[in-house]
Image 1 (cartoon, helix red, strand yellow):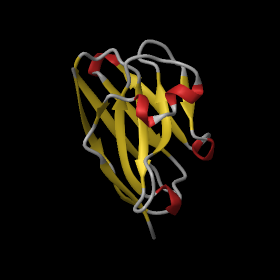
Image 2 (cartoon, rainbow, N blue to C red):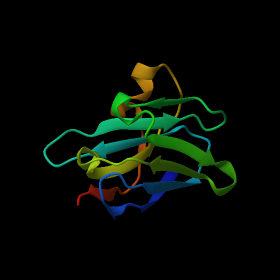
Image 3 (cartoon, rainbow, N blue to C red):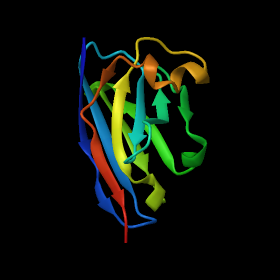
Image 4 (cartoon, rainbow, N blue to C red):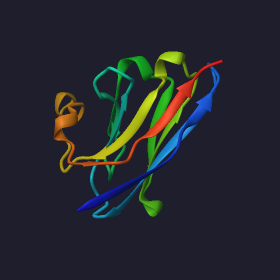
Amino acid sequence: QVQLEQSGGGLVRPGGSLTVSCTASGRTSYPIGWFRQAPGTERDFVAAIHWTDDRSYYLDSVKGRFTIYRDTAKNTVYLQMNSLKPEDTAVYYCAAMQTWGIRGFVTNRNNYKYWGQGTQVTVSS
């Protein structure tokens, strides 16, 4: 069993930066992914990281702007978001999956078993 507690988020101007975090309790060695969901849309993959090494995947539109990284001592995964755009506005969710795999597997939200509560990120002037 894994519990995921999210923090961070908020309102930021276009071009600004924001970091959201996801702290795991219980069994904490699972890969973690970040997803986002804007009103009226599906929950889409953003980034994911393996728990014990630096393997990661990113949504193409966030590559070079977002960075996913972890602090294993704190059981926390972070999503640092730079050069934010209005289209990044969404509720961001972290999630844990039980096994790593190829990109198509890791980016599929149906393969994630545990989910955080979500946190709103709004990019607006």
